[in-house]
Length: 122
Length: 122
Image (tube, rainbow over all chains, first blue to last red; front, side, top):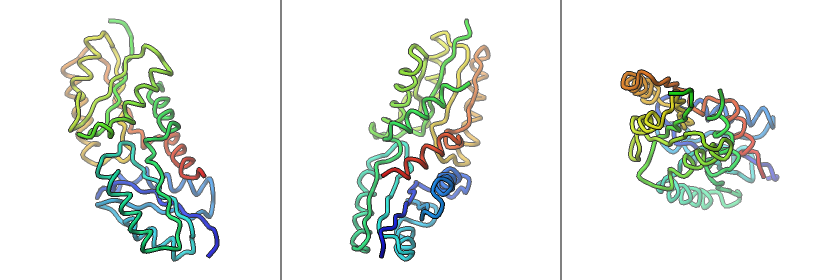
C-alpha cells in the first residue's frame, strides 16, 4: 500500500437528486483541479453511499490516507458528536488507513469570504 | 424612500446556536466588506427571525430593494417550491419593496470552486 490520498465529501443527503448536485459538482471540480485523485461523495442519510461504503471503496482501491470533509455550512450537535464517532468506528475497521476528519466547510474563512462576496454581487 | 439596498441571508436554522455561527459570520464579513450595508440573517425554522420579520425590519429601516440569498448548499424540492412562494407573499405585503430571490449559494461556481480547493488543502 502506497501513500496515495483519497477524499470523501460528506454531506447530509436527501432523497431529492437535485439536492446532491452541488456535492457532486464539488467532486467534479476536485477532479478538474487534480485529475486522477480518488474522491467520493458520501451521505449521512437518505442518499447513498454512506461513509462506510465510500471509505471501504477507497481502501479497496489502495488509498492509504483519507480526508473526510464535511460539506456542511451549519453544524449541529448531532453532527459534531456523531460524525467523530462514525469516523473513529471506521478507523477500527480499517486500522491501516489514516482517516482524517476535517473541520466542516462552514468553519473555513475562505468559504465565509466567498459567500459574503456572493451576497454583495449585483 | 431612496434606493438603498438590503440583504437577507436566509438559512435553514437550528435550535443549536453554534449551527448559526457560519451564517452570522457571513453577515459580519459582508459588513466588513461594505460597512453600513443593511444585512440580516433569517431562518426557515427553529431559529429567529423568520424571513417576514427580517424583511419587515429592513423595510422599516427604509430599504427599498432586498436581495434574499439562500445560504443552502443542497436545495431540496421543499425549499425550491416553498421559498419562492414565501417571497411572493412578502412582495404582496410590501408592494413598494423590490424583493429579489437569488439562487442558492450551492449553485454558484465560485462557491463550488472554493469548496474544491478546500478539499484539496494539506
